[in-house]
Length: 127
Image (cartoon, rainbow, N blue to C red; front, side, top):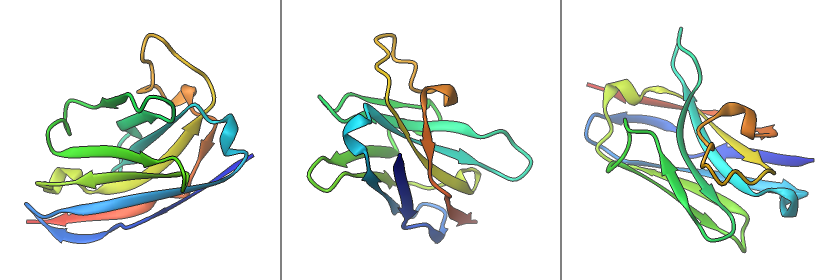
């Protein structure tokens, strides 16, 4: 089992920044990659960004490229999501997820490549 706890959400004005953290514990050695997803009210949960523990390859949704940066601290088994130039449409609950498989095709944007999920942290961007 892998436990994930997100933190760092909050209320920010448009154009501002937030950094989310996801602390992983438990059988973290079984995890190959970590991802961030988000879900706005009335919408499907969508992929935001992903990173592999080994090598640090990163993947981003087109909607956040150039604004968000995912990173990891292997020693702390923590993953971060730096969010800059935030927009009201970024408002959502942000979820951290961990997956154990390796996908050479880079299918980390797919929810079914993740085995464990955190409870989420709310991000609200005001106009």
